[in-house]
Image 1 (cartoon, helix red, strand yellow):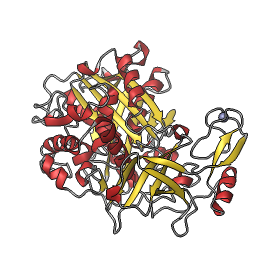
Image 2 (cartoon, protein in one colour):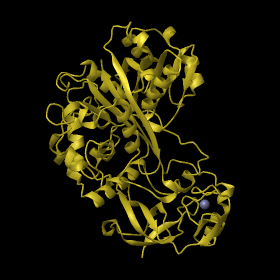
Image 3 (spheres, chains in turn purple, yellow):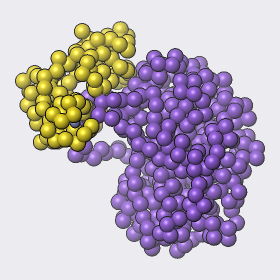
Image 4 (tube, chains in turn blue, cyan):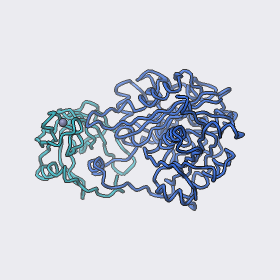
Length: 378
Length: 126
Ligand SMILES: [Zn+2]
């Protein structure tokens, strides 16, 4: 990363709730904000930059939290937005637009119905179709199986690995260790995806605080530096649809180049896991294995901490722990825990100094965003 | 997507809806770069030209990918269909035995909209 783009994640907090029928979304934001600031050893009055998606209008959020900011950004690229917000916060800090950036995320998909906004030229053609979100990801899985011989057993290993980690997370929604057999015998909800190929639906949220070196070095927390950030977008390309490759090809390449490291240097990876196929495609596109080899890469526990080559989602991820509509925030938080040595001892990667957090937002298969962060413990 | 509301059609795509209303499947073709695209727009996503002609398509293509949703009472098939003209379009394969489908199966466009829905092209096995 360019010298002048240095910044640090100094505070991180994941809300422990997974079911919040009696809390509003803004309340979850506020509790997450307070948690991350306390973790950093900062207060609300230190914050001069604020980032969140516009689920609640950002002006409402800023006023609700009673922040006095001189920079804000509500970029919405779907579930990975928090990763972009951290990258954009780093850029804003480097440009002198703010010193202490607060990024919050909250959602209540368990407790409230999500509404789709109208006036969308793409949805004009999709609303009349019979489909659910998971069907889109099932298309990608089907095509990957067709082109590369990927199997349901291989996809199941991704869930198995997540469940091995989730058993140690007291807040995880699903703590039971599952087997490949369990995944394959779960209902075939959208063939070829099984119920256990899908992430949980949970209420919750999280927040992080990002700041410049001068501030970070006055705080008592371990120094977790943002050393690389990349983002990219992929759509249907006017009809030239690609189902087995994502924008992670580009976001990953940018982040790795900026950090000056290679995939083989990464000791821990948080990979967005809305579905098992989302993980498999991202691992290939990020360069952890060749395109088409993802199935072989994830099999036999290769993603299980202490067992495989690439420990992933050691909090249990979206597949087992938490997915409050948007799963990008928890990806960053678990990466920060790993780099601080604050992950659960059973899943902590020994001497973890280089981690990756990657998010896929929107819908891989129609329109999606990829965002990659590389974080280093100093 | 049963919970979603009907979304207003844009004036630029009126030629498509007018043709569909009388059972014709038309594709937008650019008069400047001579390419077609999907989903239809009033300006060409390849070259930005606003000179769009709407030409009849046979609606023939093959299944590029498909999924079979079995969560509800009746299974349904979401698919990407690769049209012979090139674009790969998101649609449903209807009136088919889901267990008999495969990538590469030949399909043909039909207009059989669900009640209250606009006539987007759906596909049957041919
Ligand atoms: Zn053109």
